[in-house]
Image 1 (spheres, helix red, strand yellow):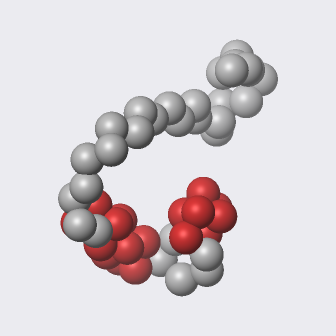
Image 2 (cartoon, rainbow, N blue to C red; image 1 turned 120 degrees about the vertical axis):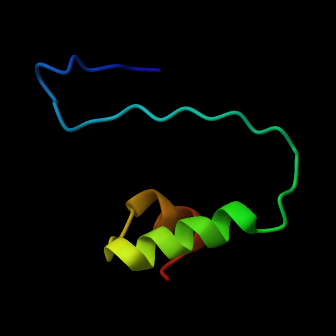
Image 3 (cartoon, helix red, strand yellow; image 1 turned 135 degrees about the vertical axis):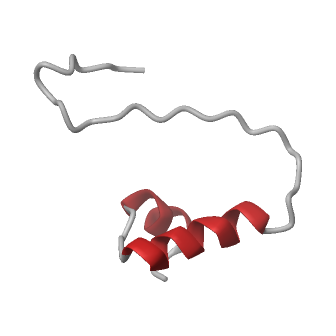
Length: 53
């Protein structure tokens, strides 16, 4: 893992997650898709993982 000081990259955010193996049957994905549509955003990570919406 590499971290760049906020002084040099104030817009970068580090994201970490832990895969638990629990299934939510798409609930979190639907919630994320609702937020994406509501705010008219195109999150790169979402597009890389799930393809273009």
